[in-house]
Image (cartoon, rainbow, N blue to C red):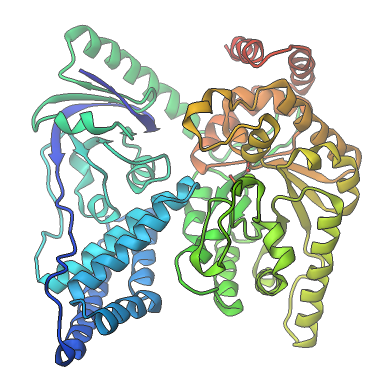
Length: 570
Ligand code: PEP
Ligand code: MG
């Protein structure tokens, strides 16, 4: 049997299945408490929280853990201690007479739903963190003991619904050759850990994966996203050859880590990464990233029930600035709204959320929210090389209004004697077609552009980026999208401002030569794609890239463009 999923960590793993099945905790709804038990239940919850934190601190002391594991555990300690969770649980105990077990299950399930329904893959993956901390607190409420480390036979392939951060951290990974899961995405924990450890992994395989039995022979192809169950001799033979080639190839790519991203004729290109918090920084440097081309700040706003204060935000940006060790970090102001709904923002339901009240549109309307974020970023700017980037700018009037508010934020900080980088750079995302078309006008008013191809593509082609039914129409190689991208890059270069790209296209190896030929200066992507893109850059000559670009721009449809680029790469 062959099962198709999403390959999230490349490589070929050959081994025997170990199927992990989990029981889902469910609210009983029956053990309602009376008045006299309220204080007891709250105390039980408080004790469980202390035990959960102590337990994680203990796990953290394991010297075998990788930086990624420690970062996850630290996030969990912070989440478990979040006063919002305590408030919500206390409210359910006191107002609804729920027992502490049911209360924590309900609170975490609500949070998990909230994260799962977000459009951003990274945010969706955070649902696993919430589920994990809920289960951990529950475990201490119930008093169940679990082994500190799970041991496996050599060459085990883990088959699971999904793997929580605690699962992957407590597993003895030395004997594990790979993972295949029913659920998950490129940014789920199992995917992050698998990539960090170099273990092949395929996620999002669907329900059929759970028909695999313990001991079945399994081959995971993390490159194609294929899982082979009890494969025949010929398949095994072919995949062994593929594994050998992969090992040779990756060995070479890894050697690129400290090699500069310079074309054969000496043009230096910046390769940076997209992050959502300080915890991601280690991974950026681990893959040779030169900084951060997109710091999505929504995470800080999503994990809670009230607006984060200026001080709380300041800490969040400061930690990231410090971890970036002087390398540039482009901080994007909040891109909330559309389908990234946050209850406490009180956003109205809309017919067309993607065309609605979102991102900079909210910020210009709700100056209080915007100015608080701007002041926090400015204050953090003395701890590193932070830059500010505005999302969803459609035209110059919005930009000018945003600049006025930025000036107000600076003035207030000066009056209150807060130090900040007075020369902080300001840039905008180019992700709306009107902005791409008027790039010549906008270029006169900012320090840099960053092209957001994810939204630019959806708005140019009128294709909802979340709608699977029309996914085949979503194509950044469409000549309409390419003409806009080329215009943005040309105008930025003409006006001598920096131009980067932080949409997914920047990490697509098929696009590298074309984008170089257009004159793109910075490629920002998921950290794990950096080696691959660097490999393309160091083998490219700029004169040739320009010829490729001219040829592509003369073709009239995306299929011919991609075929031509594939042949060129070969
Ligand atoms: C984009 O639109 O290309 C982008 C990088 O932003 P996001 O995916 O967060 O909308
Ligand atoms: Mg966008």
